[in-house]
Image 1 (cartoon, rainbow, N blue to C red):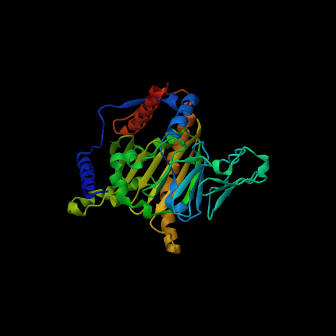
Image 2 (image 1 turned 45 degrees about the vertical axis):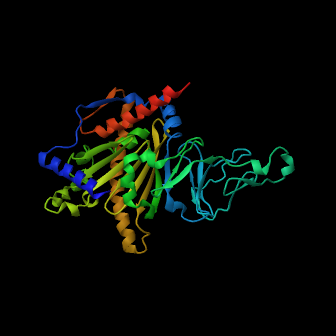
Image 3 (image 1 turned 90 degrees about the vertical axis):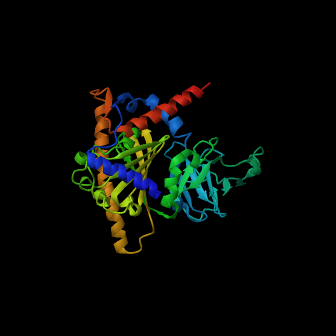
Length: 385
């Protein structure tokens, strides 16, 4: 992040601390709870948000070498991404063109020279072209040179692997990120490595899974004995960047910057920086590392969260392993507290006690989030014939 941006953000926060205030919008906002219970709406969300927008499905380090591959099923479209011998990435629908069998069933692997269908051994090269068909005489109308896997758009940018689950979608990541490009350029995520990627299934709607990250109003009470002692109660910055957001959650020690020359200010040690990338990605930037969260719907009451820690180098000593484990445990403990709350909320929705949620003036990120979803849904409806 540019120094001028850091100075501006820190100045805003220190002003809020001095005035006992925070970022606020003019009015509170109400969101109907039906959006967390409607299976009809969920199908629309799946078909639009998880088919027609860029999806981050992993980090470049997960496919660092030629033949490395990564599979991904959470969008509803089975995807496999492969690093070719030329060093580029190819993404395919992970489905054989013969009978629809998945070519790759494991989450990742190395040294893949070709894809061999485990059902009938139809074989495809790294470019997705059919190169072997056992007993080809049985398929007189099938030509090897014309039969290939369905390619998907894939872009490697800022250390992340971006894929569209729809073949006809063009990926322009810089245009998609807009003014956030400056921030992402500065972090050097492409030099990081993926550490302990894993998934969690949670009994909540995918939108609740995102919302629990977007405001600091709950931190004092929900995280009283875990992370709250590090943070200032209900002080934050919530800025929109088109469909995306950048939220700043300051730590108590940020006030120590007051007597220091602004040209020496650094925001990362004194605040957590959270990026929400539409529709389902969250990137939490901490002092020495970052964590990527991607949330995908399973059904109306369940979601899958993919968690990927990004660190500067592979830990080679016990001390380094313990250091990173301690950092990961702090975040894990806090997010598990959040998910417990989110799952309890999901269970309570069916009671019909609430017809809507009310977001306070300082919970504006929740309003921004829902407004962006509603805006894109409305645009899609107007485009329909």
